[in-house]
Structures are given as structure tokens and as C-alpha cells.
Image: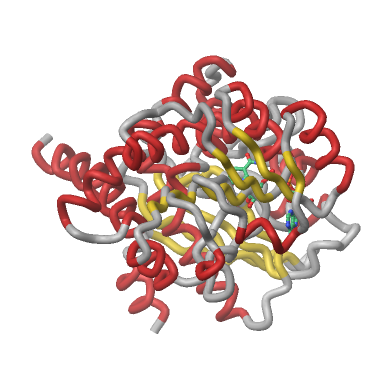
Length: 349
Ligand code: NAD
């Protein structure tokens, strides 16, 4: 039955790993390596069942294939999950075991941090393998690259909607002023946008109010703000049955992962004429930063690659228009086109 699921979802390889000494149990899923080594983080989670862990590994690794492809990187998609309590203090044995299993794949899979894992955990992985990114000695904070990519996605959306990139005088409702949101606020302010912001952290709000002349609103008010653009940079699932009827914007474009609670919410935005810049296209600066660590690119080179998100978002919108599908589906099509083009080259080689 597992083979059927793997074949159905298109995975190349799924490895079940066990280390008796540490109690480590992990699954490494390689979805597609057409474009390059499968890159995706390691998630450490107390899954209710092994089946849940298996399905999550398959789903997340497939998502990475699309994300890396659409970002124009020479990387395939993969993901690992470790089953257990991610607060455990006994990490070295676990992550060294994980590193040995990653190493056994000979570079077909490259890991990094994800939910429940830290830079220190990746340093343990690095003791056993070089096929890891996001380690303490190398990684810079990715959030400025991510923020710049989101900024370019917002410009592209403005161009598609209003015929001009200019954000001068546009009102942007920005949810979440963490690593990405704070950098993004600065870029948007410099571009002349008026910011309406919210966060659960009063200090972060005060900083953005002071430095960017933003107006602050309560947490739940952000959805109903009369603005041009809603920019989610905090949590996933914020585009849902409760929030969509409140939205008074023409564009949704932000950094948060999995903004649509369900696919049908992407259809609903479309129905209401709200242009949605697909999250994994807009926030690809994160993987671009990891890629720059693997290739030794400078921060400037990474920022230039993140600049290309502008063109990618426009190509997604063009695909949506020409095929009559919502933008969240068009992003997948653009990714598939790139993979299929390379597959074609491999066949004729
Ligand atoms: P972060 O944890 O630094 O910031 C999140 C911010 O959201 C925090 O300031 C937090 O206080 C705030 N927040 C939490 N709950 C909130 C709520 N209910 N309402 C308003 N604000 C709330 O995270 P980040 O690195 O800035 O990432 C933001 C989002 O972008 C996340 O969804 C992340 O998965 C995604 N993302 C980040 C990167 C990156 O490079 N950091 C890359 C790709 C995607």
C-alpha cells in the first residue's frame, strides 16, 4: 500500500531509518531530483501515528519540489521527519544518527532546519555529513532575503493589478513584525507605502511605528483594514472562512507559509477578485538563501536571485490568466513546466 501512495505522489525514494542506541526514528522522503539534489528541512514532531509521519514527509517533500523549481534553483524536493518529542534535551545522539542516515544517501538529499529543529541540531548533523545547510558556522539570517523577495512579489502584484509597480501612497496591512515582517516594513516604507500593522509583541510594533510611521491595530482588526494589500507574515491558515469576508483589499501577498487554510479559499479569493500571490512563490527567498549557502553565493548574489521573484510572480499570473485557473494552481503549473523541460532534455541527451 505504501508503494501505491509513493507512486501516486511521484516520489523517487522514501527511507525509514532507526537507530537503536538513541531511539531515533526518522523518515527521509526524496520526491524528485530532476533539477538537482533534493533539498528540504528536517521536521521533529510528536506524530500521533507512524502513518501521519509518513504522509507528512511525503506531502512536505513534494511541496519542496515545487518551491525549489519555481524559485529557479537547481534543486529537487525532499524532506525528513523525526518522530518524537522535539523538546528533548538528548539531541546530539539523535541528530548524529540522523546525519549518518542523510549521509548514506550520498548527496541525493540535503537537509536544513524546519519546525522543531535548530541551528545547533544541524551542527550535530554536520558532524556526520556535509549534506546539510543552515549550520551555525555558515548560515546568515535568511529573513532579509526572504523579505526582499516578498517585496518584489508585492511589486509584481501591484503591476498586475494596477499597471504600475509603484507602492507610493498604497496602504498595506502587514500582519506579523518578526524577522521577515520588520525587514519588509522597512522596504515598503522606503517605497512610499502607508503601513497598518499588528503583532502580539508590543515592542516590535513600537519599533515599526517609530521607524516606518506605521499605524498599529489590534490583532483581529488587521483582516478588516481598508487597504490595498494584505500581507500575512505571521501564521499559516489566515485566509479562511472567517477572514475572507472581512478583507477589503485587492491583493494578498506575504511571507507566511500555507496562507490558504484549504485550497478552496484560494478559489474564493479568485471569485471575489482578490489577486493572490502564491505564498511559496513569494517567500522563496528562504530557499534561495539556503541555496546561496550551498553554492557559496554572496548576500548580494542571493538578493539578486530574490529579485527574480518579480518575474516569476508575473509568469504565474500569466499562466493563471491564459489557462483560466486560480493563481495558487498556476504556481504548480509553472513549477511543473520547468521540471518537464529539464526531463525532456534528459531524455534527448
Ligand atoms: P518570526 O517568528 O520571526 O515572526 C513572526 C511574527 O508574528 C512574530 O513577531 C510574532 O510575534 C508574530 N505573531 C504571532 N502570532 C501572531 C498573530 N496572531 N497576529 C499577529 N502577529 C503574530 O517568523 P519569521 O521568520 O518572520 O517568518 C514569518 C512567516 O514567514 C512564517 O510563516 C514563516 O514560516 C514564513 N517564512 C519565513 C522565512 C524566513 O526566511 N524567515 C522564509 C519563508 C517563509
